[in-house]
Length: 246
Ligand SMILES: Nc1ncnc2c1ncn2[C@@H]1O[C@H](COP(=O)(O)OP(=O)(O)OP(=O)(O)O)[C@@H](O)[C@H]1O
Ligand SMILES: [Mg+2]
Image 1 (cartoon, helix red, strand yellow):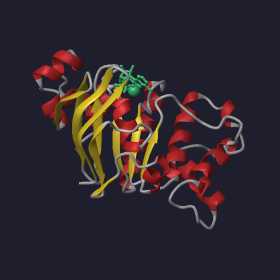
Image 2 (cartoon, helix red, strand yellow):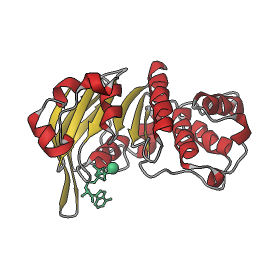
Image 3 (cartoon, helix red, strand yellow):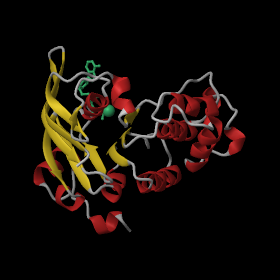
């Protein structure tokens, strides 16, 4: 098991965003984190990656307690999150954005950073013609890829993807799903937050469901899609996996 969160709670003022949340992520897996808007998904990823401090509970990564370590120490251990609201350095070029990931990641002493950055951009499907464009000139699909490239440049062991596919059209979504599978095949473990159930059900071995900051279900897609409380609170209907995979 790569990640184990035990009883994590987090308050913002009077609002209990997370209440006693426990979840595990197996090494090499793709695990999904779903739930209605405001249920605490982003907060959970932010607690794991060190953006937010937890009020109580523990986050164990590779057997060590990383809860409330500074964010740079967590990322240097290999835990990196992409942002739900796409973020880039708009005045830097596409290539420079990825170089930032290399310089602040686990490959700081990479001997050929430029070549490495280009290789990663090509891996995520950004063509060389775009490398010298400013990030501010890129469209949303390109920015999502660049964001993923920047995260991969840090050489993560656990990648936390927060709605990476939001804003993409169905064709771009299909490509992004393939890409996420390719990332996993590199040996990167993935915890993904996503609203589109077709994507989550097709990608993940395990799905965790949050509601009002509490974990209400955790299990394989076929179990989650059949769970009465998950259907009532979140799904609205039963998802038949054979239809989703068709
Ligand atoms: N920095 C913050 N300060 C105050 N309240 C916050 C902060 N971040 C999140 N919240 C609140 O905590 C709750 C959980 O928010 P969170 O963003 O984690 O939900 P989410 O499940 O990611 O929602 P969505 O699906 O809309 O992205 C919400 O009520 C939100 O308003
Ligand atoms: Mg969110």
